[in-house]
Length: 378
Image 1 (cartoon, rainbow, N blue to C red):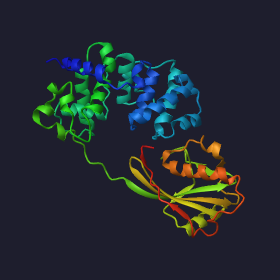
Image 2 (image 1 turned 180 degrees about the vertical axis):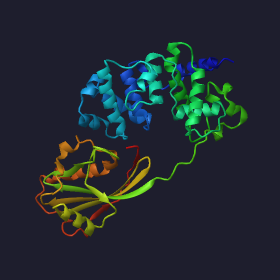
Image 3 (image 1 turned 30 degrees about the horizontal axis):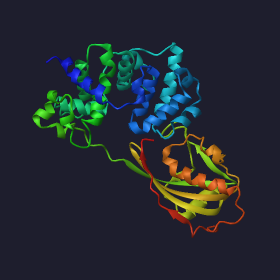
Image 4 (image 1 turned 135 degrees about the horizontal axis):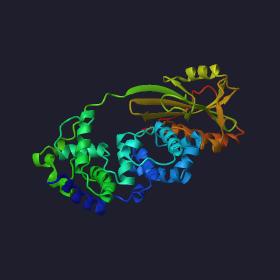
């Protein structure tokens, strides 16, 4: 069998059975690039809406290059991994500086944030280059097809699989445009993770060594990940005069440059919160609610205790005080989504409040709400 014969049944199946996704209806390298970056570490179902809204806001690479970082991050919030958005911005500026989109995988890899996978995905789908795009789906499919028992997280195994994909590429540009997509679709819908592959539905099961040898369900091999580090944090939703306090995170590090509610390390008691407020030049007039939330990053888990407070005083920290309308506009990671909802519920009524809260005073009657937010990749 010629290696390229493998492509024919795969592409026939793809044309019949592939999901209709908006980025598959275009050969515009900019649109394909945006979709590929969004799809890194994010589910397809979640990306579809973000993709449409992003392209409405930034319909061309020039529009993206001209946008402010704040506007970009505002459109990106909820997708997580904000370094992806910043690299998109940097690369867009570089594309405009160069006078147009690079058309080969090698040239694309010279742009910020574009590695081998993204370069191959763009070069094949937009320009018909026979360039492999090996993501987790393709690693799984190819390790089963070739009965490869190497650790798919090892660079040497990835290089082996990239070489195998390259060898199986169809010859024509038209077919090359969808070959990577077909392999990824096969992995997402048939040669699935977290369960037995659907070998009876697979268009290339006749070429699968893993199926023939009875090893497909044990593949791929993946080294165990290190346990995530758990960090306790206390988040303070401070409300004053119909506004809530926000601050900007440092320009480098986790969630760089995004806005957040003031927070400190550790799980603080009410007495410790009161002391922290005093250090910031504030005092609590109402202890309104207590929240719990958990947020999962790639290597860290935040276990958060939140206090929603009405406060008095002139803060010494230079907080930004946002009203209900402005609160929606700040680029804020989804780690704070539960606290943002709580703030929005409080600050609008505060404008019209004329009677004391039933929980005013020392906080001993603090309303407690242990609502767990468990999301990832932000």
